[in-house]
Length: 214
Ligand code: GLN
Image (tube, rainbow, N blue to C red; front, side, top):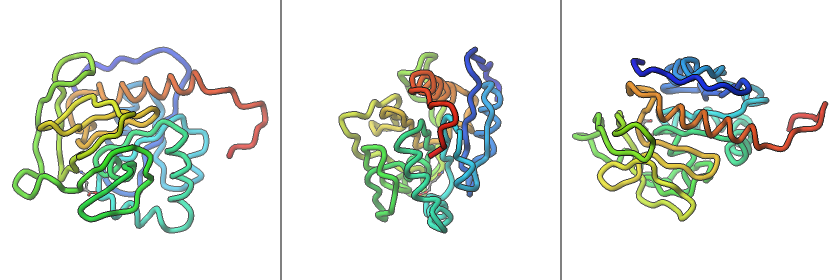
C-alpha cells in the first residue's frame, strides 16, 4: 500500500472479512491501515457485533459450499440484508440477485445480474485505470477472472465502469466491485466503504441496554 491513508476520527469500527476462502488477508491489512479493527470471520458467531463485512474475491462456488454446511448461509443472508456489506469479485457474485453462467444460489441482496468469468480466457486478468465518481481521479482496477455486471436495477448507483459495464456499484448499505480493490495501490474504495459503515453506525437506532443480540 503506497497511498497515504486518511484516518478519520469517530467511534471505533469493527469490520469483518469473510475468511472461508480467497483473498481475505489483504482486505484486513487495508482496514487496519485505515484505522479500523478487522475481524476474520470463519464462523457465524463471529458476525456478532460487527459494524460491517467484506466478502472477498475467490471462488464463489467454493465459498457457497462452505456456507451451506450448517446454517452459515442463512445467518449471513440475514446480515447482508441489514448491515453494510462490501462484496468484491466472488463477493459481488454472492450478493447479486441474478447470477448467470452458470446460474448459482446467492443472497439476492443487490439488484443486479452478473455473468461469471465473463471476460473469457484471453482477457481474464487485467489492470485498468478507469474514471470514477469517487474523488481523486481514475481508479486502478485489478480484474482477476472477473464477473461482468450486465444489468443494474433503478436503486443502484454506478461509481465506476469497465467497457460500459458497471464495475463499482452501491445500493443502500451495499457496495460491490467486480475487481480487487485490495490489490491496487489505492485505498479509496475501502475508505468509501468505511465511511458508509460509519454513517450507518451513527444513524442506526441505539439498542436498549442489555438487549439480546439477534
Ligand atoms: N471467477 C470467480 C467466481 O466465479 C470470481 C473471481 C474472483 O473473485 N477473482 O466466483
